Amino acid sequence: MPKKRTARIARDRDAPGLDIASRGRKGPQAPRDGRPLFDPSSPSSMAALRRTLDRVPEVMVKVTGGGRDSGTAEAHIDYIDRHGELDVLTDDGDTLKGRDVSGFLVKDWKLETVINQRHRDAPEPGEKDKRAKLVHNIVLSMPHGAPPQKVLEAAQFFARENFAFSHRYAMVLHDPATDPKHEKTESGKNPHVHLVVKAVSETGERLYIRKNTLQDWREQFAQALRDRGVEANATPAAIRGKGRSSMKGAMHQHQERLAKWQSNPEANKKPIESSYLKGQVESALNEVVNGVVSDMTGKAVLEGTRNNVVADWNATAHALRAAGMDNDAKAVEAFIKTLPAVKTDYEVLRDRVAKDTGRLQAALGQKPKATQVELKPAVDKQTQDVDYLAPGR
Image (cartoon, rainbow, N blue to C red; front, side, top):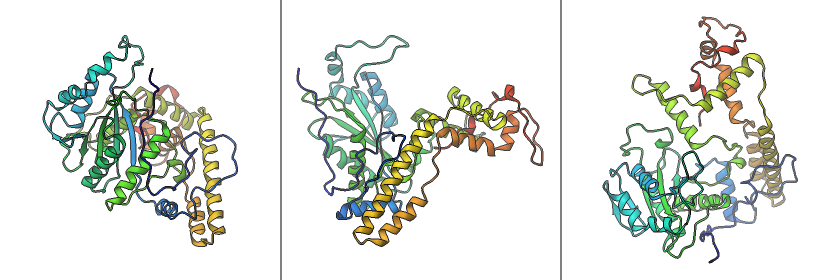
């Protein structure tokens, strides 16, 4: 049996840059001695430091799933090209458009042949699908305001560097100004490219996407944007003081639909209630009203990560000062002071519940009053419609 290999990942030609060897993992509970995040002797590393301190817009590279059968792969392509309304750019350099594009790509990529070679049956209803992916669905995005065509050009360069002559791929640009989708989510307001990559190369090598692979890809995509005159950075979220949300993409999309409905109930249909978010709101209400504190073991992990990040930033400031870069060292020390407090998704939700007196009263079955009132315990009435109190992304 041939040895499985991960596809070649092109490195940033300006490396070395950011030292992120362990930043993708959950932080240990106890703090450790820090080490510099940036190398004062490397111009590219110092450029990355200054982009981070200046809070240059961060790129997003995310794997959103992948089809395990040809039908799912075809449905995803139909979704991203809006059922034939948007251009699909292929690895062959072709531009395809029309309702039959998804079927054409599935046949051209011989996805059915890949299925037949895997020797694994589809799962029974209710069982977990353990089949390997036929395609990987990847999103490359920039915050609102970035020029969509530049984002597309950078995505094309990124795909050629990583997958040309190995893994078949196709992509679609979602430009907020031209996207025909009627109901756009909040994330849809950012220019982004949907990239579909065949999981098995033409020589039989499977593409494995690791956590480190995603950071490598972020750095490449950011560099490609900078090469095209677009300010872009690729610093791990923890280094910027942002905790990684435990909520899945579907939860974020649900929240966006709720926010959209809440802002204009007459023009938008109310989304179906989420049992997960409802449970979270009930727990938050129970804590706010009755003082019943939920399990907070996850916060200890976040605090461990923060302690390590702060130690690394302090080590960075020390290294900069030792190199005679006092102004940069002072900027790092000022940046450390701006890191936001460590909060879990649940704590963000709880704080919003505590501040929203009007909806709290509605949830507890009380009539709203003109003046502030003391909320009395009423746990039996917590299950009313407060699903929309979920935190924003």
